[in-house]
Length: 407
Picture 1: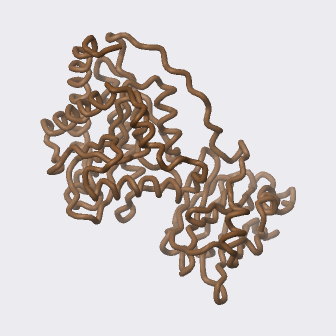
Picture 2 (picture 1 turned 30 degrees about the vertical axis):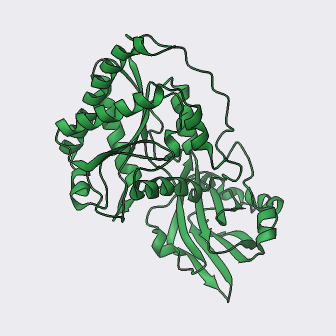
Picture 3 (picture 1 turned 180 degrees about the vertical axis):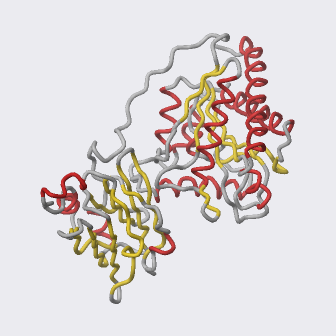
């Protein structure tokens, strides 16, 4: 199916009787019992989604890896689990959730290139319930690549990147602008342990840390997201620039199967990772960006290295000093810290060339001890105090060194 045909299917796929006009505008709920992704025949895939009502939708394909993207007006996914939904051997992974405010997204990572054979949204005239049916059939890699690509519609998509003016320089007495970046969000849940998702835990912690910083003297705080919505890695960095950030802190609690990962860890940007586990963690963060339906086909794989080469000479030492101060602050409030609390890797979210940027893993969901701590409000408060103390110590030391930096 061509990109044009996919878009033709997209909006208002069926005529809705006037009697259901009011219900049609409400929040649609997914019917888990009527939803599945299954193999059909020898090579085909059948997608069935039961909905409480008809809603606008669109679909398109992305390459590298091959993916089917389904966008909907906002859907309540409560009760639907990815493992229960996906019973197809031709689908590697299914993800779904909020994308941008008012819109939801489902992404299916495919084993091999496929195309949409049929797509239809049927509405029951009696109940108003709806059923979306999509059939996928094999496609050649050449035709798949030729037709794949994300359409752009301001009603559905993230805004186009905009030029950002450099913020006006702030004096040493001005509050330190701290941009807190709760990891993941929306369609990207991050690490999961049972029913608990990293995206929710990090949003909770970021809000708690924000409140602590605002109650302390000398801080302004901006969150890259304050709801359960998807924010691209590029957008997170752009928001830091727009806010005139003095510091950027990305907050995570991942899960690592490589080795015994536990305890708080602070990462700084580096082209070469300090260890294998850090490299795999950075690779997974970028992969999750892909699996959230981002079209990164036009990006430069060497962007991190180029930005490192162009970064101001004083930014990297300031960032390393920030990381050491945060490690010291968290250690003094009890930690526990990782046995190697300072590490480095090519995290794309840390690519701002002239903003000291770090990524803090406040713990790992794969560690039973960390998992228990992360759910404890008193422990989170202690870690937040450690981060606050580290920021205060770094700000004081950084201001003292500023006159020594060559302008």
